[in-house]
Amino acid sequence: MFKISFVEQVDASFNHYIVSNNKGTKAVIYPVLGASLQQFYVNETPIINNIIETGAAPKLLNSSCSAVLFPFANRINKGQYHYEGTAYQLACNETSRGHAMHGLVYRQAFDLLDSTVKEDAATIRFVYEQDDQAAGFPFPFKTILTYTLRNEGLSLEVAVENIGTKRFPFSLGWHPYFYSENLEKSVLLMNSQEQIQTDERMIPTEIQANNFPKPLPLDQQQFDTGFILETPEIQYKTPDYDLKMTIDQEMDQPYVQLYIPNHRQSIAIEPMTAATDCYNNGWGTRELLPQKKYAASWSVEVRTRRE
Image (cartoon, rainbow, N blue to C red; front, side):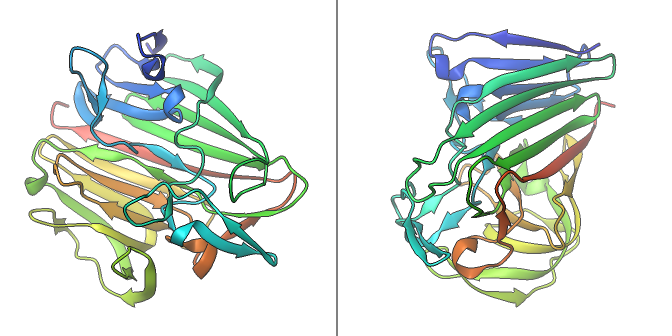
């Protein structure tokens, strides 16, 4: 049986919802942190494990873990772009390189919309509305996140709606970090024949042919790299579990960004509807018309060694 509970913390930014069953499968979602999934366990095995308990306020191992990336994923060069003859300047939050990064919703506080508990699954939904006052993006929108937890895994659907009177450009993505007790003994499998090359400031310069090895051992691998997928599926195998991510983005070609942080306790596998700097290079950029909606979903199925 599944259940949903709410936990209040001294620091309200760490208030969270726990969606769980009685078999050690749970999802822990922090509404003030962009309604992000900070912990995810299957059969008591950590799949996403981003909270560090310090005895005082908790800390995040990765600051952008499980962020929903909208209205752009990854970086926009210097935060600058032109759209329909107008120049825009986004706030640049990647100070080391001077770019706008990760969109506008990943640090916003979401409200609980509703939840449903069944015998074999539980669903919880969060909503956030952006007005027309955001720097560099004066287009109002609404975002609804739907998490569904099952015994064998989890899915996240992101639905976005243009609630304004003008169309706008967008891309959408998700930024989960998948834990491994030993990344050097973990492997990745995906079908890709194209890699996105970048300059020293991590801005794309070209799309280059490059067959991705199958499988790819992650021992000593370094990634902050974009790829175009041939099929909408990625597998990640660790000493503790096997994971399959299925991507449903209503797109001809899904993009993915791989990133391994310096601590090497996890890998970010980031499905995206467009490439980095898509507002400027146009690689995968879409438009959302007034009063129209777009939805993408990502499903994660897990088989643990304890099964």
